[in-house]
Length: 341
Ligand SMILES: *[C@@H]1O[C@H](CO)[C@@H](O)[C@H](O)[C@H]1NC(C)=O
Ligand SMILES: *[C@@H]1O[C@H](CO)[C@@H](O)[C@H](O)[C@H]1NC(C)=O
Ligand SMILES: *[C@@H]1O[C@H](CO)[C@@H](O)[C@H](O)[C@H]1NC(C)=O
Ligand SMILES: *[C@@H]1O[C@H](CO)[C@@H](O)[C@H](O)[C@H]1NC(C)=O
Ligand SMILES: *[C@@H]1O[C@H](CO)[C@@H](O)[C@H](O)[C@H]1NC(C)=O
Image (cartoon, rainbow, N blue to C red; front, top):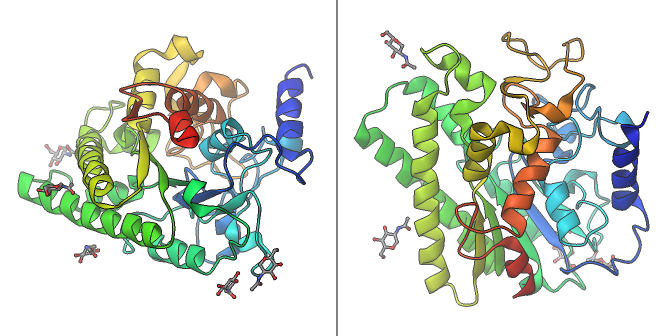
């Protein structure tokens, strides 16, 4: 029972006094991206992998599955908390039609990518931005609001099975396609009034249990995927620097989820991890995290929750590195500075 206390406090923190954001440091947060950021949009979509059954959400207040692809809170929840919001912005598809929401809106959809061809049945990035365009934002100062984007891993997951050993020209073409589309998305948001971007890069996706199974070296990280992530992340860094010099008033902070998670894998003890390779839910076998899957008891000691996604503990730690941290975890300014600017 003692274990429930911190979770409960956290729950109170997020859910108490939804009215009045006295502590909020930002007018609103608008969230875009994939399952690392989804807080329930996919629950409203047909024919798509959802996280709406236990054990997903087992460490969420009241052990409630919400559509978050983890055991409790995800990274967006921890960012929202750092920014003084009492609760994470709600999923767009859960909202009554066109009322202005004072904490912001989350458009993220598990399975989506930078490319609309990645996860065609999800809310694609283009569609997420279209939804934002028609969202009622009355009484919100957009230029001071934070636009969080966490995407790209699924583009790699979709690309690799057809390109197990990509040659340089294929890698280059892949990166260029992602970057031209990513550029288009950021410009679209800018044209709709966004100025402050908090971008979260692609993690070491080759080290997740799903990717380790694809590797020929049993259990090792699948470096093809990690190399692609590094390549795309480097290009995103240049892209943002380029964009901020041409888009007047654009400010950004680039959080390196890649650096944060790599650091946790290299130094598990520092974050209290005992297992940074296998999934808490589904384990070392190739089992998915289904309602009948077995899952670990010591969830704070696992980096990975299921075959692809991190535990709440991992997200919490990564957000600490990114929110008020320094390079290599966040550049050129951290999220805290972005909020203050
Ligand atoms: C936008 O939201 C505000 C506040 O909720 C509401 O008063 C207004 O009627 C809404 N506008 C439209 C066009 O629905
Ligand atoms: C919602 O309201 C805003 C005005 O607040 C309006 O511009 C927008 O078109 C509306 N969207 C929908 C889907 O009705
Ligand atoms: C976006 O990606 C598609 C492939 O999915 C590609 O054809 C297109 O050239 C890319 N760039 C832009 C700006 O749309
Ligand atoms: C695994 O090894 C086989 C045979 O050597 C090779 O064809 C395949 O491309 C390798 N796969 C990866 C992911 O390296
Ligand atoms: C950044 O700008 C330079 C100079 O205009 C250009 O050559 C390069 O392709 C751009 N890179 C990205 C990733 O946008």
